[in-house]
Structures are given as structure tokens and as C-alpha cells.
Length: 304
Ligand code: CP
Ligand code: NVA
Image (cartoon, rainbow, N blue to C red; front, side, top):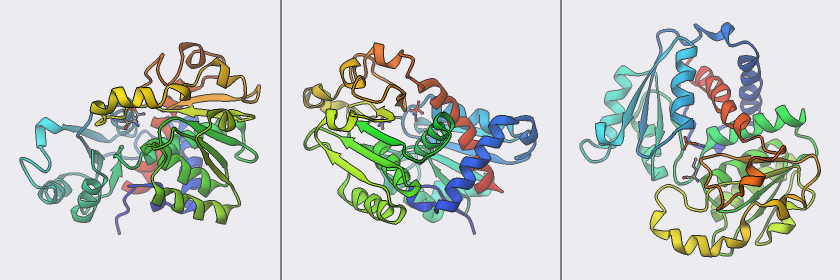
């Protein structure tokens, strides 16, 4: 039976560790996998712009001997020119898998319902599972373990946080979150993440206090204040988030050994200062690189 990756909730802990371990092997020996997906093709249905997700999936497929085709919104017009169902059914006849970046998460669910090939979420308004998996891979790479690592996320309660919170909870990693009032993570996702945390024995601390989140943290993580599709709310959001900037003052509260993470694209000078983004603690480019290694592992697991 085909398996989709729409959110972290689709993966068991065992599968998560398998993906992380496989990514490690792929990163160490790219040549070993150069024909691993020979003859396979994926489509990239993107309703929003992308740098990392698009390029890392396309090059990842290429490096494993497979092929990818980019389908921007003006091309196939999913949901406009043609129904989501028809797109799913037709593309399933050509492709071995589909990576989709949508506004509404429900569109992904509809794609997954009708497609006979795996659907991989390349970001929706609710989730960004490939990002979270790469982020935790990067954290393990940097710290050599997940044990006693505290991840602190300061900023918007958005798609990136939703996936990260569920994944840290599944992996038993403690998480602290600080968002402005009214911009916290989705309540149902918090409930789900807390149930994962209860099982793994980790904690999730959600507050409106960035200092509380940053104090003694191993990982300081932030993302944009204005996600794709929220452009009309920009002015209001900039006002609401002004005390949640990841700057030197906040970074000083973290451990000396802390790392700084951002899924990118970053709005330098807004959610993160140049000094933090370019500091010796910043691992944002390793984080971006690892998208490719981890997604190769995801493709290998789902397309086989
Ligand atoms: N982090 C991330 O998904 O980047 P892109 O939007 O550039 O793909
Ligand atoms: N939260 C951001 C992530 C971009 C990778 C957005 O949805 O635009």
C-alpha cells in the first residue's frame, strides 16, 4: 500500500529513526545511492514559491538517478483549470510520487485521497514535515545525541513550529515555545504533540515569554513572522512580534554551546538580526543542506 507524508503524525518513531539513519548514510556516501531511484519520476506541484524545497528535491532525485518535473501553479492550475481529484488521478498514471506545496492542508489530503502514488508535503499552512525531519537530523549531527537537548522556538506559531513540536515530542526532546499572545500554535496540534510527549517522557513549555524560552537553551529556532499567504497581515504582525526578535540579547541567555536555526528564507533585521544569523552559533546553511539528504531518505522509503 502507498504511504503519504502529510505531517509528522503519519510517521512512527521507528520510521523516523530509519529516515534519520538512512539520511546519515546517504550524506556520507552519495555515490552508493546514485542509481537507487533509477527510472523513477516525481512531480513537484507548487502553489507557492520555494528555493530549498524545490531545489533539494529536484537535485536529490537527480543524484539518485531519478527524474523530477516542476509543476508551478500557472501550469496545471490545480483546483482551477482542473479538479484536485483529476490532477491526482492523472499524475498517478505518469509519476511514482508527488511533492506538493499548497496553501490549504486539505488540498494535500484530497490529493492523497485520490492519488495512487505517495504524496509528500512540501509545506502547507499546517505542516512542514520534511523541514522538521531535516532539522532534527541536523540537531543530532551537531550534538551527537537527542538526549538532554532543549529546543526553543521563538516567534510565530506556524506550520514549521507545528511539525517541529510534534517531532521533538515523538523523539523525546524537550521543547520550549514563545509566541506573542494570539499567535500560538494550533490547539489540536498542541494536544497531539503533548500526547506524544507524554509517551516519550519529554516536555513542551508554551508561553508568551521569549526570555523564558531562550534561557539555557541548546537550540534557538525562529521562522518568519509573515508566512506565505499572510502578506495582508504584515503590518499587524510586525507590531505584535516586535519583542520576539532573535537578537544578541536573547541569544546571550542560551547556553554557550547553543546553535541557531532558521528554516529560511529569513527576513534579516526582522525576526532575526544579522549578528545572530551570521554568528558562530548559526548552523542555518548546514540545516538547508540537510534538507536534501533527509528528503533523499524520505524518497527512498516512500518510492521503493
Ligand atoms: N525552508 C523552506 O522550505 O524553504 P523554501 O520555502 O525556499 O522551500
Ligand atoms: N512559515 C514559512 C515557512 C517557509 C519555509 C511559510 O509558510 O512561509
